[in-house]
Image 1 (cartoon, rainbow, N blue to C red):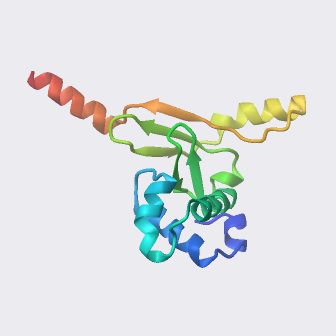
Image 2 (cartoon, rainbow, N blue to C red):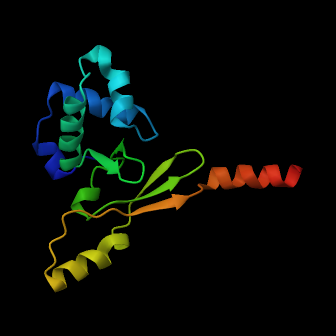
Length: 144
């Protein structure tokens, strides 16, 4: 479900192409991976892909994962209206879960308002192992 901000801004043809590529891939993609994938669709220069990704991020269609220097499509379409998103990133398989609960970053927002601190950006990324990878590891440990 797109946010109000997403619904009111039309995307360019290149933005639509990049967004479709991000939505089709469940794992985060770097700018250079996207260039390699989309070269035949007219997206071949780093400035073009970074400009496009920055706009998609600003509109809430995509998120930049700081620790991976990669991008992923917004899976919820409304997280930007509820505050800053948070992510759980599996170090084994690369799966990224977008945390839907705004309470995760609410304390930071409240503190910033109370102290009149102007927050330019917030990065909240949890790194570890997802359930599937933990279960696979446990299954392998039991066989040993």
